[in-house]
Structures are given as structure tokens and as C-alpha cells.
Amino acid sequence: MKTWTERLNTQGINGIRPSPRSFSDVVEGQSMLVPTARQVDDFIRTIPRGVHLDVRTLRRELARRHGAEVTCPVTIGYHLRTVAEAANEDVERGAGLRDITPFWRVLDRTTPTTGRLSFGQAFGAAQRRREGLPE
Picture (cartoon, rainbow, N blue to C red):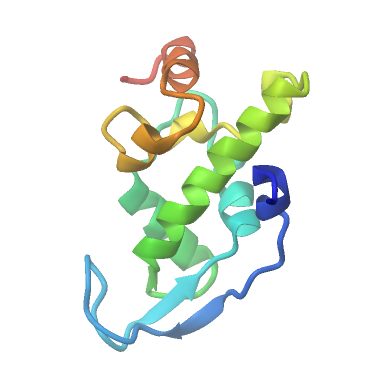
């Protein structure tokens, strides 16, 4: 079984394609970014300290940066977990906070992905408090 870090670094299939149907806030036919986990990770690393983006805003900005109208809401959910779990693996290997992806700037206690993290919510909540973000 692959580690989360290996999943993060897997090439994957990405690109922009027309949405096959309407769902969530996506309208059928809109140009939809299907990002890789690495693209999501790279984007989160650009969020400044002390700034929180909700998932919808992250999706909108990621799409804009890649020239699409929307970002796939299903794919982003998978990749947010991959990013957070890979960051946790980095912490377990001894990486400092400056060297890991600050997933807590997107994932808070109300984000469904947070409840699925294998390492729980305490670490992310502590980082949010440290940066002055609402829990």
C-alpha cells in the first residue's frame, strides 16, 4: 500500500475538461479543473500564515489560476486528505512546521475531510490557534 506521501507525488490524471453533469456548485459543461494532489499541495503552500480559505474559495482560486471555471469538488476532497496525511507523515519523520504543507489553513473542524484524518484534529486545531485562525 502506498504511503500518503507517495500518493501526493503520484502523477495522476489531471487537466481541464467540461463537467459531465451538474452537481454541487458545478454546472454541466463548465470548464472544470481536475487537479492532481501535488497541484493542491502547491496551492495550499501559497496561503499566507494567518489566512484561512474555505474549500469553496480554494476551489475557485485553484480553477482561476489554471484557467478553468470550477474545480472538481470530489477530487478536491480526496486531495485535501492526501495533502494533510502527507504533511502528518512529514511531521512524524521530524520535519519542522516551516517544511510541511499548512493544511490547517484550509481544513478546520467543520470541514468534512478533517473528521477523516487518521491523526485526528488536535494537531490542525493547535496550528490554527497558533496562527490566530478560528477553530
